[in-house]
Length: 317
Image (cartoon, rainbow, N blue to C red; front, top):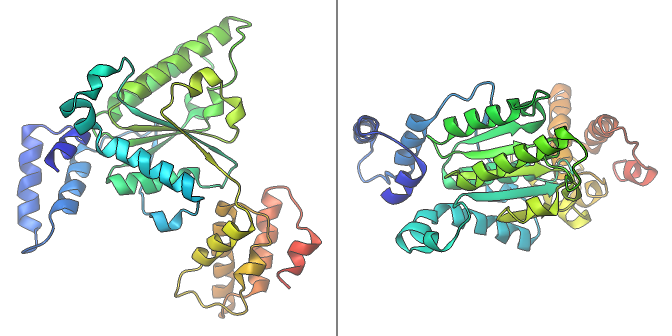
């Protein structure tokens, strides 16, 4: 709907005319103009955030995201809150009944590789919006006042496009700060308060990620609309991820997902192992075998400073 486009993209009259001209010039007869219109609006409103954020081209779909049903439904609800915000808050009047900001905020918590960034990518693609990843570990400055200045510049630039903002490594800024021991802690509280205030007023979707939910103070959690805990995949979920890790065109020889699922690794590690084994098989000029997977898994485990157990190794022999 036009109202939804106006909600997400701030385009002036000249830009709107340019979008309409380009759309009509390139449209096929009887084609659905919706996706092309959204793409043109997104491209016209895109801003330069070099040095502040990294733009991720969202290509993943819901099929790529393997989560328990209740987590999947929570993410779909998040999408609904972003998609229908203007209708519910403005036209239906619910915005006048809250003193909080009308932005949609979320915390994605879970071990590395459990799907936090992938979920943000899926959501951005579903909404037809750009996705920008901000590494809070690099944004937070040791100089007093610099963090707030960086965040102010970031939000001001992002407002034009209504993009999905993914604040990675939230532990760099969010910690248990209930006890103020010195001036630095007091100022850190101010920086956190500023970030939350800007997230709540941001007209797009702002997501924080953390590997440890327990590191985030409960007072901060209460100000976030959605909190999603991404669980480490059990053996059944790992089997499902392995089934999707190899594309239909990939040649497989002796690969059994139930055996691969015995590797106690995250979904992100599974995708890395599958890709590395594919490159090894391509180099050898043959199909992907358990031996290729075993070699790739050993490299992945070494990166995590872990050793494969005897049972894990045996599953690939």
